[in-house]
Structures are given as structure tokens and as C-alpha cells.
Length: 88
Image 1 (spheres, helix red, strand yellow):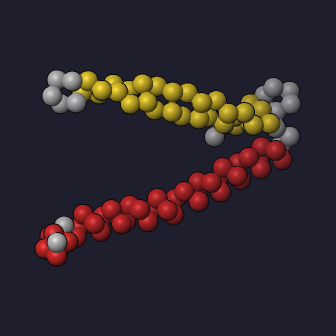
Image 2 (cartoon, helix red, strand yellow):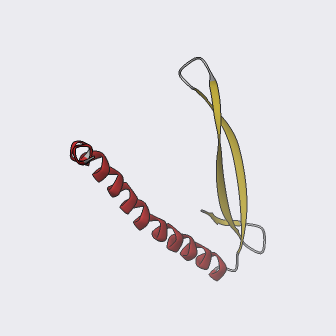
């Protein structure tokens, strides 16, 4: 086991760096969303969310096919008169 860790340390270092980046990015994204929602409410707007899904096909490499589902959510800030003030 000792040699395994010694031989593959770059892989483990890369995975650790990715984990740190994700841990730092998630709270920043949440704060950004909160700021945008606050801005929308300050403008007198209301927030609505629309979620869409898509099935993405892919080849498994051995002649088979697979698919995965991608989900996206779009937030829209709408003024009382119906104008779109922004999307996030």
C-alpha cells in the first residue's frame, strides 16, 4: 500500500485540490444568488424559477448507447408591470 500512495500521489493531490475548489466555490455561489435575489426584491420584483430537463445520449464505446439527464434552473426577476428585470 505504501508504494501505491507513493506512485499515485499526483492523482491524490489533484483530487484534493478539486475538493478544495468545490468547497470554496459553493458558498460563493450561494452568496451571489442571495445578493441577486435581494437586488430583485429591492427593485420591487418577484422571483420565479423555471426548471428544464434534457436527456443527453452518449455512446458507451462498445456499441451500446446510454443517456443521462441534465437539469437546469433559470431564475427570473419580474417587475409588478410584467417587465423582466433580470435573469440568473
